[in-house]
Image (cartoon, rainbow, N blue to C red):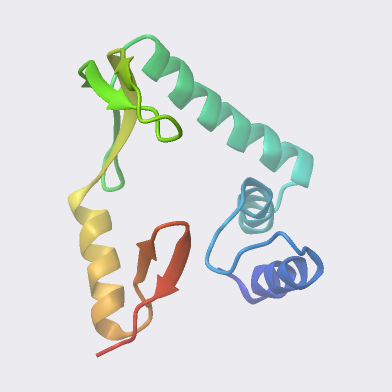
Length: 137
């Protein structure tokens, strides 16, 4: 990330009470694309939306999306099952459904693990609704 984008991102996080540390929003992604490619925010937003819409439409039509070096998106089938209503404890039939699934590519996994080993990335451990940053050993 460029220094200019870092300043903008930190300013956005400071002014936005809902912003979460360690989470990149779509607006921040648009800002990053705009600054790296030197486009207007509107043009960058159009590009980001086209990419996201293309992924969604491909998944809707049952296609698998492969982005070499990054990962792949596909649909997974979940079988029907019997669940429980947490409020009443009553048994409820949950129908089968398809869910989107992202499988990171080998190069992405290696890049992330190398950054963790170098100490430039601190892994996050999610527990329930709250994220806790793991302490470096």
